[in-house]
Length: 416
Image 1 (tube, rainbow, N blue to C red):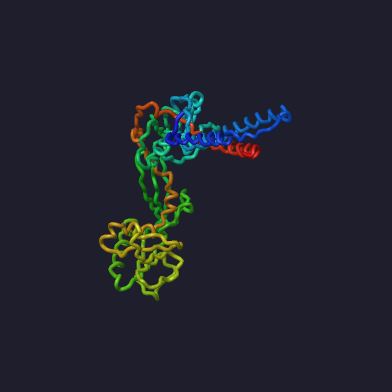
Image 2 (image 1 turned 90 degrees about the vertical axis):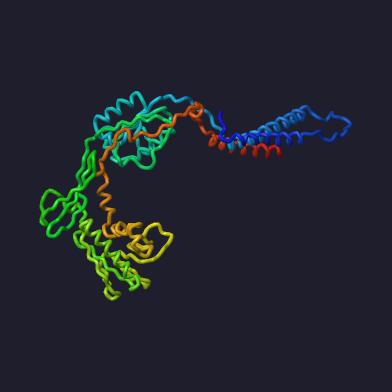
């Protein structure tokens, strides 16, 4: 037995309160002299004894209510049985698509507990030839969750992808042995299609266990090969058109924007048309309007980047509450275009990356060695700290509710 907050046990002194009330209510009554007791029957004497007995039950109920309430506040816990298993096995779901790994998991499950190394740590079930999900789990987050499991140590079979390492390496008091499985998987996936002069260019994302890289392939504009061009996002097929309007006092900032856009064009190869305009020359069909002025911004359907200073913003360009509305939070200077990465922020407006990121998922197949997966180990010398307890609070609340109902019913019957 263990109390998380033993200080509250002083509340057991409250048991003296119902005892005192009980003794006070049963103090000696006033003596009334009568001439004869011949009219008092035997049955009335038994009722008197029953009355005293019921008061004792009421006293016990009230005492139990106080005791249970104190135990709830003290957070009573009862020690669990010692762990029955010394070791458990965990398999990342994606590697179970490999027949040899599935057979290993199935054979181990006949002798030792086997679980899936995914959110919730569900029990492994063979389920025939079912295709498993290829989602890469958060290795260290799941390793941290093993701390609460009823096993002394664990063996984790995983693909060992670099994408699975997120956050800080955890330190836990349980041995975890990592075994990485080589799936020999590599991918080559077309990501985007773009115009390059009179030809088309396909950008491929290529990933294997060693590295992640990209390749470009030029094809004729009338290409009729095996590649399904309709399935590839067609970005950069036409030039990205930007129009900028600025007050004379902000002419220098317009020059910074032009330099940033030239850098994006040279780096990405994306053709960008950049024009300075007057208010009368604003065109609805342009892809982006940069508005460096305090005058009212015209209502356009496409993207608009408006200068609106905000000293509390943590980015140079932030998204507004309206679709395709963005705000420049600072006046541009030679310092903040580097500190706040103006070119990178503009790149997000010029090249929509959401679809590319979706297509890029699953390409990164870079693997890490088992040593990099190892979590920090903290040896607990005090054996008591390894003991696991059941928290009985929820059951005590139920008991308290039952006792309160019983006490009220009995008190109403006895008019106490």
